[in-house]
Amino acid sequence: MELHNQLWASADILRGKMDASEYKNYLLGLVFYKYLSDAQLRAVYEEENGKTETYPSRENQLETFLEWHSDDESGVKEVIQKKIGYFLEPKNLFLNFAKNSNEFQISHLQEAFIELGKQGDHFTNLFDDIDLNSTKLGTNSQQRNITIIEVIKTLDEIDLFGHDGDVIGDAYEYLIGQFAAGAGKKAGEFYTPQAVSKIISKIVSIGQEDLAPFHIYDPAMGSASLMINIKDYLNNPKKIHYHGQELNTTTYNLARMNLILHGTEPEQMRLKNGDTLDEDWPTDEPFLFNAVVMNPPYSAKWSADEKFLSDPRFERFGKLAPKSKADFAFLLHGYYHLKDNGTMGIVLPHGVLFRGASEGVIRKALLELGAIYAVIGLPANVFYGTSIPTTVIILKKNRTERDVLFIDASNDFEKQKTQNVLRKSDIEKIIDAYKNRSDVEKYSHLASFDEIIKNDYNLNIPRYVDTFEEEPEIDIVALSKEFISLNEELKQNQAEFLKMLDDLQITEESEELIKATKDIFKQ
Image (cartoon, rainbow, N blue to C red; front, side, top):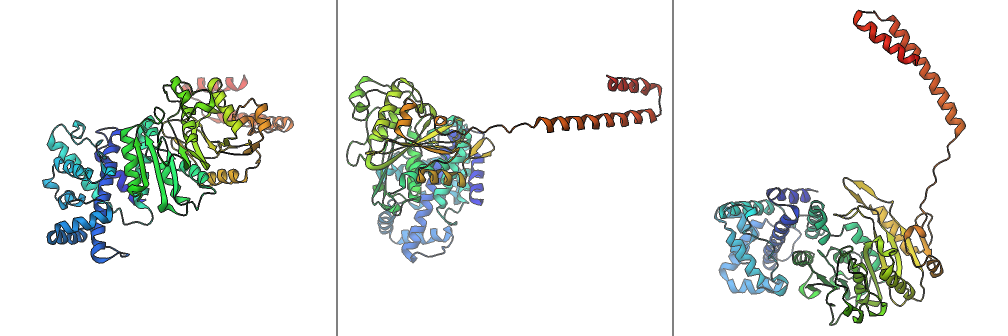
């Protein structure tokens, strides 16, 4: 896709100066600012001329803006701020930075970020992770100016509105995915692969497609990509409310940008930069949600302090997740915030399915409640930064049944370079098996509660789905005949080769070599 190629090429200016986990902050932040700037130019044009199928160039849109601004500075500011929720002065437009590159100073961009940050809580401190004074951009201010303006000019060539579909969101997700691929373990902090997001989003939306408003919650939201996907499966995407918490400040800002880029209004976002496990959030209404989705850090450490035994999130289970593995702490937090008729989907390592001690106690309690609805085994190496196989656990509340559907999708993928990728057909196969909730040979099994008890509450998928393939029987007779035939053919070839040696003209130099060759065949 041409757009993707342009976006990736723009990273070349920073690639080499710093690693992907660092330069993503600059590039994604500038893409976001360009989007806001270009969206304002379009909004001005629409106010003057109405919406249309085609728009003039941004240069012409800029002229319209400058004329209006010259005639009525306060008027245009009031109208545009009401229309799109912010206002950028002409000098702070991305296009103007690119057009006046010879006069550009990094301080101009810094001032623009500060001014935007004053225009609402959703913009506050949003660009704090873009360190414009970093020596990695250049050893002096002039070199840093050159680096940043080159990035700006390259990005400015991209037409963010000149393509069909959700080009802004798609481009942003593409960039996040590309940076994740190059960021190794750090990628897990902010990105869930699209295929996995689609599986969870589709599942948690089943039976809730017409709900409006719809409230979704991700207590470890990363870049919010796992929440954002839900809009593709609901009939009222404009009435989705996103609630999320993220510990890492850089990633938290990334989530805010990502949601805004996907057209989310400020009143639809309730996000917090904080530690999900250390202190429960949210505690004010709404604190129960139609869907809870999560891809938390695997086997992370947490305090497991005894005070949490009286925490309403954990107290009914009698035990806490171990200090060295917070997997069940995340799961129980999310489950606590799920509505009675909602659905939760969480990605975790396979160890939660069979580990004992306190985790075994928690798992047994969940199974006795009927909370675990399905267990889906994913292929190894589908996540950036880790090659381990993972499982998606689906949870529900107030079930009368206590059976569990097991799906083993670990062998369905396409290998691409260093990653395994779930194809559209693989995703559809998982969703069909989930909906049908029945046995499919070597793929899925609906296990009764009695069966789970017999397995001592161990949910390891191979106990329920047998994917063993027998080796084909070896036909000894046919193999012997083939061996005899090959041996006869080899003898014939040897005889022909020896005859060829006899026909050669013998020289002093070759005589000894030919004799040695014949000796080999005699052995």
